[in-house]
Amino acid sequence: MSAPAGTSAERPVETGAAFALDPRALRDVFGAFPSGVVAVAGRVGGQLIGLAASSFTSVSLDPPLVSFSVARTSNTWPALREAGQLGISVLADHHDVLCRQLAGPADRRFDDLALRTSPGGAVLLEEAVATLTCSLHAEIEAGDHTIVLLAVHEVRAEPERAPLVFHRSGFKRLHRDDLDPSSLDGRINGEPVRSEDDGDLPTERAAVAV
Image (cartoon, rainbow, N blue to C red; front, side, top):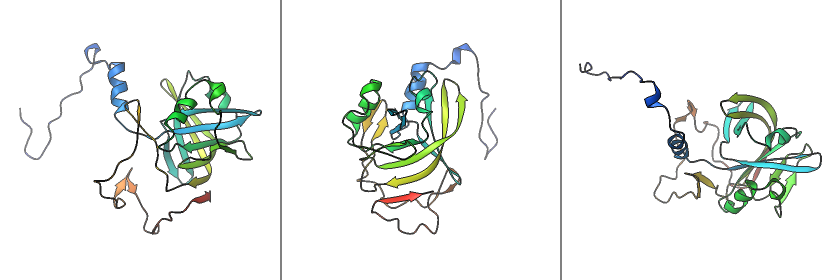
């Protein structure tokens, strides 16, 4: 039977073994969504500890919160979570080798990197697109991962730098030659992308404490 005019026809969701999700197919679909990559790092007992994450996202402006997800099998996170503060560094488009280093052996992840450390122990990369000094707010178990919520205390941006893009298990760069360069005037995540009092955002480096 066809659906009445002006309505959409919906089929019932089929379940069962024949419709089980194939892990490889699911991973491929997840990988179709491009993301940035961040370094999450801190100093614990005098030791530098960190990891690379492509699951970083903003969560809330008030209070300021961000998140990333980490596998529950991670050997790094149990130690890193003990840091008084955690540094989030958004990797730049020339950081592909650096990202591989951060994903490599734990004792070599910070070799020859230019870093700065907050009084609370957050470790930040000097050449990042942006950095956030955070502290652990909450952890939420979600399947085979843990969603880590972080409270943001200080941020710094370098607008002239472009981010590294992670897509389909490989690294990419942003290209916008044929795109409208103006800021989006609309709503994303249910709220305006830019508030009316944003005005013209400064292009010079900005450090903001929140």
